[in-house]
Image (cartoon, rainbow, N blue to C red; front, side, top):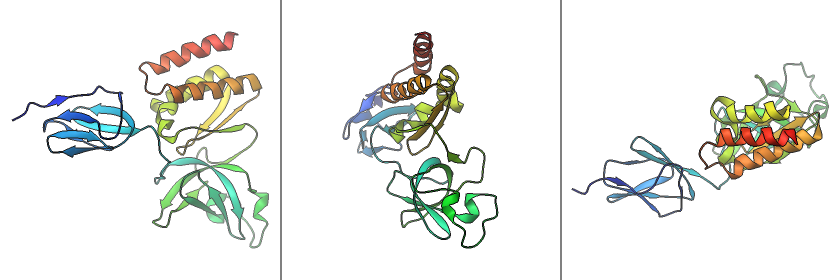
Length: 232
């Protein structure tokens, strides 16, 4: 029987078809598969090794919505009873009057007074249908219409790294730039700061995290970099 061995390291970038491990001791997970005695990568991504389980976190690809995800969406249409939202994914979202606000809305009311076309909103996904439609709610902490500030788009696969463990990474950016930041699971990020320079710095920091997401010790590096930049 062939001895099992790992051919890659944790956080290494791999390409489709690359052999990751040999032998039966290792198990394929998301983004990898078994081919006879080997485990092979299905996509371009970052290797994550958890014990004997090998997972690939994709570096490219569109956001695919999941129930309970919090996303930043844009109002694309307003009907007599709901809002259509662009989610920056292959799925369109519908926000019903019931889920849009705790206020009472009269029948036939002008819904654009609440959210107009082009407005950005923070919503939570409550259901994903097979027809590529999403139901969302705005009832919950942090779910709201976004005012002022700027919207930027990042790779949705890098969102966990931008947020950090229990919000640690984005918390450092907020703290040093004195900005408010909301990171949607769909890769849409809202940044607002009283000082435009700090708003610019927060955006640069997020772009830096996105670009360097595969590097070790990134949280410390970003904090050090921000401290230097703020003093300039």
